[in-house]
Image (tube, rainbow, N blue to C red; front, side, top):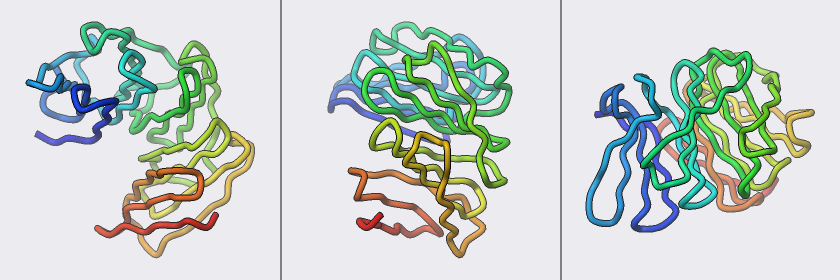
Length: 193
């Protein structure tokens, strides 16, 4: 079993996605035990995020995006027009703002809970592997070649931050001024934007 991501809204509402098998790639902890579910397509899931217990999204290979509003009992597939690449991570703010990143420099943004999407081209090469946001316009993205991207204008422009690494980076934060980057098996933190 290879887990790629986890997200929780409460101690009795945890989701884990990855490669346990392609038929049931989503696991959910309800406080007493695990259950499996699927978005209705056999593929691997790579990212999970929710704005609350009843608004959870997963992304995966072959441009799969799915949403549950009933604690993983059922999943609704969401189509990103024109997307074909593997999607690696999803995050958002509130109940409507979503960011998805994936292979081939793919960045997708939705401001209406996944009903419509805008593609934003990454200014750097490589596959994009993680995304974190503190607000609709303040977004941090990493790739598989040691680059951290930061935008404060919703993707119109990006600041490029290079690490001395050709490895895959992961990003996460506690607030817009408290960002963590996993690089080369260590964690780097910035509190100064």
